[in-house]
Length: 517
Image 1 (cartoon, rainbow, N blue to C red):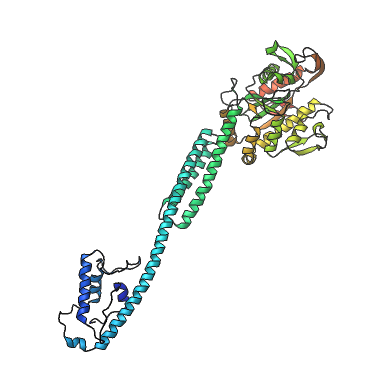
Image 2: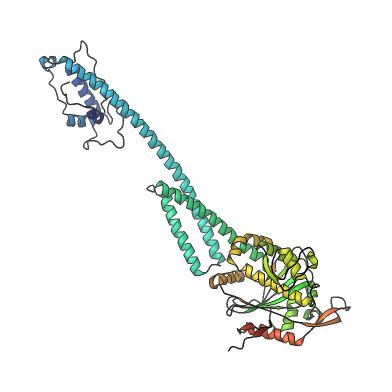
């Protein structure tokens, strides 16, 4: 051919892929070559694509100029000569062998260049298709994931707002962090410009948070369900349990099984709480103490028998005894105590004596601190025959167990780790007149203020007597008779806490009202 400046790079730019006419007798007809070239040019002008199969350029191939006509580009860059219709024969015949070799070299180089180009193009095209399909699958997965994430976050936020147990500053910080993380997750998983490592981290974070939202929602709904199912109607409630002092009683029924089983009230304790002074006073009453029941014409009986007639009878008797109002009650039984203590991992109780409980003769309570499970703590709290003072020491032991329960239950770590177990252990074995809203307010108060509760213990004492009781039909039974001085002291301490006065414990372990000096 006339132009001898072609090289391999030119061929790659041009994507030369046409057959070079075969020669006869080692001669080349240049006019035929030019006409074929012009014919191909005319065909390409009339079609959107070249007449022969020229592959699409690779993504990194740079076209020369803005014109997409490869023929015009080639002609412009390589100055292909437009030869006259009748080229001089002598010009062709001057170097016939040189032209034949040149055409053969071009043909071979063109085929090799095209084969390499086609191979690379096919490989890159397959990679691009795979990446495109993979990106579509990942995007579909991320769309589903983010939809689930948004729903889980919404349900979690609604349940936590409705539950309303977290302090305002804690809630603001928690939801601020979660909203920021949610924004990052949505951007990383939805944006096409995100890096692969960003998508992976965002996906893992979304999965972890979905689990967190699910667990948090389950906790909230479980708590609301438990509190609603355990609460009963109460007309003696105070306006705000986090601002006003109140009394509640703990009545422990001496039966196993569900809380609807009736029995004697073996544990009787008036608990006075003042959230402002952060004081708790536990006033215990012996089970056989002399009381009077207003609903039975003020008949005399011992306190434990009021359990047969229901909690309202027990509350009325204790209100009359101390001349105070009881605002709430908590009703438990043997099963409740065992289940609750086991759920929180046991309690550490300090004993004044070493003894073997009647209910667990193979177990020895050591003097000092003992770690007890539910069954052991119950046996410890019920024991009285092992002590010289009998029921008086049993009351002290009950107070020690209750104090250990308060300390363990108010530990945030304990409640976080044992939350579900505590709720499931107490369901159907626990009854109270605190409303769900009041319990949640107390929890929120505890979390927000983290008060250091000062716990004081007191009990009333009495004498020994044999008196006819209402529950025995007038037959004589053992009764601990009232001691007026002990009762008056208990009234003074209860009123002091309700009125916001500080209590103190003297060297002899007696609780008194602080002088204020």
